[in-house]
Length: 509
Length: 111
Image 1 (cartoon, rainbow over the protein chains, first blue to last red):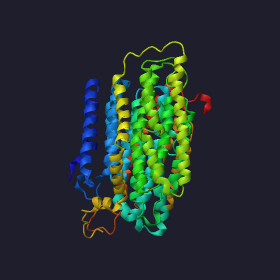
Image 2 (cartoon, each protein chain N blue to C red):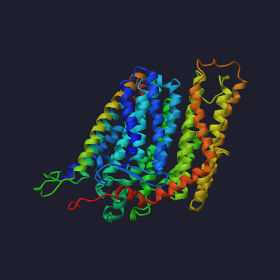
Image 3 (cartoon, chains in turn orange, cyan):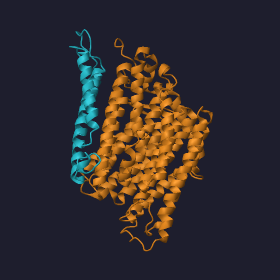
Image 4 (cartoon, chains in turn cyan, red):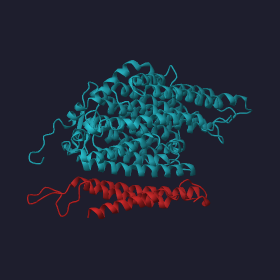
């Protein structure tokens, strides 16, 4: 058995208590440990990537209890790709936090590592209940990170965030219970085998459970009509935390891909493609509402939040088509939108820090320090986020549009995607011209901040470079993503990898 | 027994949903607690209701009760207990920082 699979969970799980106990009074030590752990995570994720690169699916039985009786971790191309993305984002965001934000409150680095543990676990687990547990781990850490630094508005938004996620967790448990009561299993691969055999009388219970679970994932992915928590949370969270949260919405999207292709996909009999009729309209409405929000935003942080909602709509539109081609396009857009969404929050924070009193409001104000540099960064990020050529957002949208061509709703999808792109361009263009151009007509200057925020700028540069790299290497990357999508849709190989070696004890079943 | 359990779950859920929709944080916390109780009972029932049967293999057993939901409920209880503590602390902090226990942080008259 390959023990590397559990390393992305174990490493932060060990590092976080060390940070909590040994490095709590020494910020330099905490930063070094946190950085080292995140770099090591990236290394492990890349190593796992080379292991699954040949199309192999690795499964890891915890405590050597065979599936479906024990809990398994599964590493395939999709989950490892998400691990690499998480580690890359976490590393860049950590640079930004080390620039000073991590000293606003206590235990930032420990919570950060716990958060990474939860996210990595959610991507690796092959078991529903384990997924619930890792959701809780990442949520509990995110509650702490969300109110990092404190302040009335942030704590208020934090309470709302906790409440909505507790309700979400309750729904998750009810949904898991409903599915278990019918299928009698919590293992995802085993569920995929059991779902086609469910009796007609039990179908209602099974499908209600599965759709309830879809609702929970949609809460995480901030899909309309359960998106209301996102703008308040992201706009009030500390910038590095909001940037890291860009991957959390993708956890929801990942779970939708994993579960509704594997267990409720083509082979599922009466429950086949259960999610598709709900997901596509919801995703299209999300896309529209998000981009209208971009147009209506009055602060840059708000604009970034609605851009994230819009991009989730775009991403889930690709997923909801449920074809391998559309999935590979959606995965490309997922990589792009995570990086582009995160960098917007970081830029918004640097601008807010340079304009005391007026913060990141989209209203004309005097010039501030490093204005042209931040304007250039915003310009590149806006091109990527709105999906204009030549950056990765354009490639991603083009791939999704191309994949939607054979769909019955192709006209609607094309019209909405292109129309909302225009809205986004207007919204971002207006925000940028108000922030950077109208300020030149104002008298006076804001005083320069004490530091140049070199590390924060490095973080922004890294994320933007990631977007450029996605564009430059779009060819080999799409080839890899196509193989990934094919692997996701070849569900029997996943089931074989998880249950293949299982020798059922005689007499028990 | 089925009627008793299902009506208890329904009552707890209804009361929980009502309280979660209230405007002040303390009823919301209570509502979340009630919801988690309802969920725990529901999870327990997913293994079917069985009386006086062992959950582990034994030679003399005539039948078994499903042990898995019991393990799940244990985990769920631990998590919901911890989360109730977290939300109480967050709600208190919000009350002290905002001077109001309103979920939206509004002034007293809004409730």
